[in-house]
Amino acid sequence: MARQKKVLQQTARKLITFTTPKSYVAEQFRTLRTNITFSSPDADIRTMVVTSAAPSEGKSTTSANLAVVFAQEGKRVLLVDGDMRKPTTHHTFHMGNTIGLSSILTRQAAPEDAIRPTAVERLDLLTCGAIPPNPAELLASKSMDLLIKQLKEKYDLIIFDAPPVLSVTDGQIIANKCDGVVLVINSGSTEKEMALKAKEAITASNSKIIGAVLNNYELAKDSHYYQYYGSSE
Image 1 (cartoon, rainbow, N blue to C red):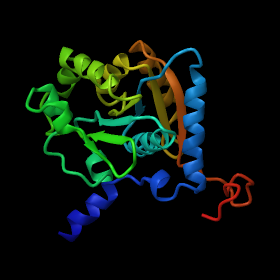
Image 2 (tube, rainbow, N blue to C red):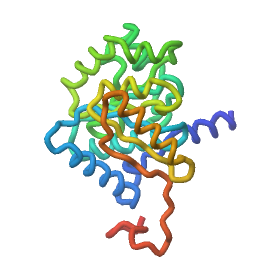
Image 3 (cartoon, one colour):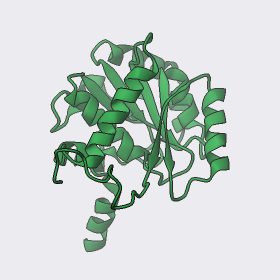
Image 4 (cartoon, rainbow, N blue to C red):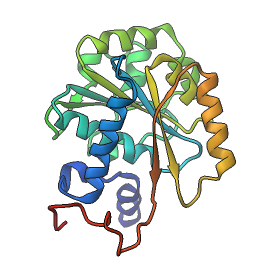
């Protein structure tokens, strides 16, 4: 039981934008939100994908916190766990995962039954649901297209947490259906060649990168950016 609890704690991503909104890191997520908005001044970004080149680079943490700051801005936001191989959002938001995206795409549940509100105002969550044997086929299906169309009628912004683009094709499939992609790069592990291949994979999916996140970059403690102006957190 103790080991299981430890695994869950490691799997759950930190919602620092919700728990510590005045922190320096939370401010960086708000900056990312602004940059994404400015990236396409003539286009209305309604759907976006957060992905990375390889696993464990911070995409799930980024997607969850990005969803929070957009909701805090006043948008009606839906975070969708599109990683149907290693889902984590249900841990992050402390929810069950009995029904979710896979349930809708296999016609076992309706969206209104699978989508649940979170503790963050205006932010709803659609977890992965039961892990299917054929995630790529489900994500590429016409049912997925119809679902996105239905969700856009209710939400201002839909954010997909997708698998790494160089590991499986799922990320590229979702990217092809969305308005833009946020690519997460881990400063401690992502090799330049891997980042370039991820960029090429996104371009090949006929989508576009609207933002990039350099994750786990350590600032020097004497840096004037180290502490957010006006905050002691």
